[in-house]
Length: 502
Image 1 (cartoon, rainbow, N blue to C red):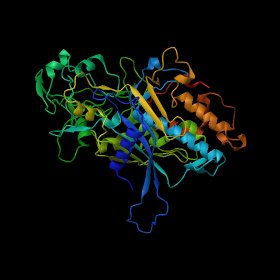
Image 2: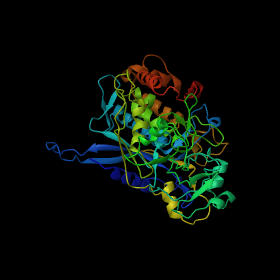
Image 3: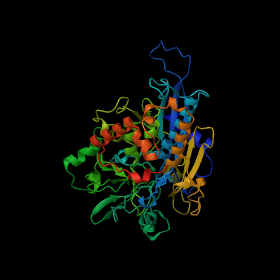
Image 4: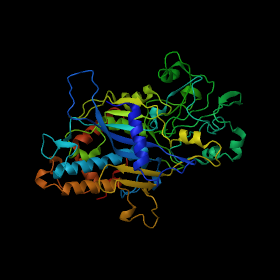
């Protein structure tokens, strides 16, 4: 049907041809992350009598996102007009919701063909049975999926990036996040710190600090794994087993790639020990900010949630007979572990039960492509060679949806790029995929349908606020409650007063 390389190539070509220059990384100075949702549909008229025959399919990008940032808790707004999380995966998913809203509008108004067909209950729709959607990301999701084994003598994925793990072991690099001041100094080739530890590209250095041998760290691929220093440590057999279980048989695990995402309050927490025991796996994590804690869960956690609740969110469940699930996840070329991906996205939730009809833990197909995203950190690092200045994450995020009107949205710091402090409260200062704008699109869909054709969940009582509409999606809320109770009890939820806008 399709191969991981075909999906990656399609997304990279779409990025190059359909996304504007505005919002893309500055050449040789910036990098970014890419994610997309791809619609898969069998070509009509194929003979299916031969079981070995590969079904020919059409592949279409229906949403895309780039981005590496998220805002701190202090910058969150109760008006719903700011993007709290602008990581590529989240931007792509919110852009996908915009696409789904448009397709529901087409179905409800009978204007033209839609991906949805009538369900069995009044006002409800379901996905056409021949369609499926897969998720592509140019990098391993931040959080649990990025905690993967580092094998002795394995080929390193990138040129070295200057970081002093030995002198500052708490400095967890996460290139997709707002960097700390010390980290930026480490990455600045002209800083005194860097000059003391500069390496030739591709040459791992080995130096001794306090009697412990340490390898120089290598650059992380986007929000994915960050290679740490390799150190000799006294590790228990239980701790070693958590990562050696992920390594190919017989391979010696010397350390783990690390994630910058922090354990949420209420979780056991990382041990912080040197070497393979640094992280505990399977935990919920939040994306760190620069000095200002965030409330944004890691992309690994969010993908795991979507694998149980669907990608459509609570609002759209009012119109859907069953959730819209992803059939596959494809990751671009980067540090990667199939075992870690399976654990993070599926196995953490595999024992969740008693879900409402239509909901379930999906056995999503997970594969990796051999194609590298040309504006990933690794690719840019390799090309820039001796370019002056430091390599930094691109501050902008781009959203693209397969909708006829204004498909593009370029933001920075959660608002449309170029928004001034004075203009923040204006309608023009809202991203098209912000909560308040998606809610407005939902209300427009509702107003386009005669009230006698509304689904039952919207006819029980008069609803006004965003929070009220979310809570009224009873099946979704029941599934979400079961998931939290059985697997994700420490999930950070925004207080209700952040959802009271109309």
